[in-house]
Image (tube, rainbow, N blue to C red; front, top):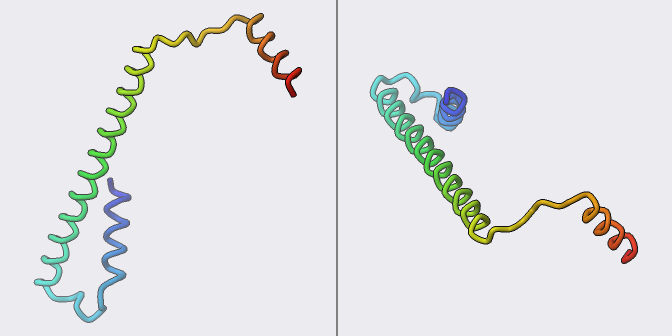
Length: 88
């Protein structure tokens, strides 16, 4: 989180005119805007992570529902490899 905060801090400060940096009112407004942006970015990251987790869970459930047999014996693998070589 600290890296993200540092990134937004540096980015926002680089966009500002240098003469406005000294006023206390400006500093208060800037930190309020910075905190709002940080909270929004963090919330977006959390929501994205949750959505990805739900997608993964859905895919696993779908595969389990189809009951795919992904195990293969050595001789079956050798036969598949032989067929692939002969086809090429």
